[in-house]
Amino acid sequence: MGRQPCCDKLGVKKGPWTAEEDRKLVNFILTHGQCCWRAVPKLAGLRRCGKSCRLRWTNYLRPDLKRGLLSEAEEKLVIDLHAALGNRWSKIAARLPGRTDNEIKNHWNTHIKKKLIRMGIDPVTHEPLYKDDQVSPQDQTVCRPDAEQVKLDVGTNGDFLLPALSCENSSNCSPTENSSNDGCQSLDQSNDPDDPLMRYIWSEAFLDDSAWNFMQGTSSTDEFSICGLSSSEDNASWLLSCKSFEEERFLVDCFVGDMDMNMLETGGK
DNA sequence: AACTCGTCCAACCGCCTCTTT
DNA sequence: GAAAGAGGCGGTTGGACGAGT
Image 1 (tube, chains in turn red, cyan, brown):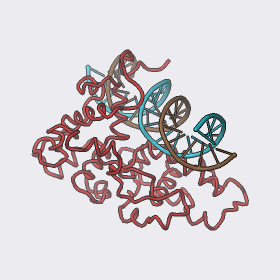
Image 2 (image 1 turned 30 degrees about the horizontal axis):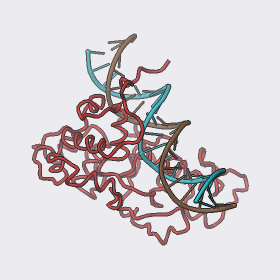
Image 3 (image 1 turned 45 degrees about the vertical axis):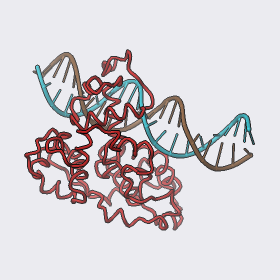
Image 4 (image 1 turned 90 degrees about the vertical axis):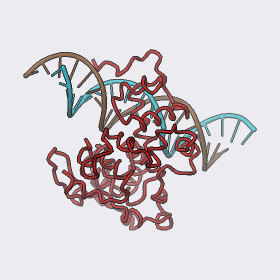
């Protein structure tokens, strides 16, 4: 059975995105905000499916994304959250600022899963694989997933409310401390300046004037367009106007910096 | 140098959920 | 309440790349 395709498949381009396509998408979203994804390809002049545009933006082009491997603190949080939530990657990603569900899912499948198996832990149930549970002391220091470690509160919308990963927590992870693991890089990896594509995409030459004004914070009208807000709204109201935790996190990352996300949960709504 | 194999991750597919009419 | 459509989600794939032989 299945649903109708989200777009006309005829003439729709697939495969890797080019720098030119990225430029069009970034310019469009920064100047018009995230509106109807179905309409984005047409309005932005892209021969792509709307879903493809959304995926490209959320997983790669968003300005608040971190790059590189997950830190040990992030990895531990992913394991704890997975023990509590299972394969609900978007819920897990919502608790890791700058990380996408796709990225976490990939990291789980390529790194964490194997690490847990090496530790003698079933990555699905988070129970010991073997009754004897022979785990080396070295491995035990990494993380012992335990669903009871994570206290769950249920929000008004039925979602779990879990503690957000704080910056201080993450900064405890130094390269030397993690030399025995799969690698732990500096946390401050947003839009890695060494990535030629990202450098190009976010360069002044790449973005058109209005988009660049947005990034420079000099535009009085465009700053809040990503959430469809007017610039006259004060900080409190634009936070409250956000439709989702994702939007809140995005705005905070962009404009506020290290604001404690827990405040948003307890006081924002 | 050439080939094979394994790993990584961006992107796609199809189903689910939510919203609108 | 039902139907339709759009966005969101999780599973999977396939190409790029590096390591090993």
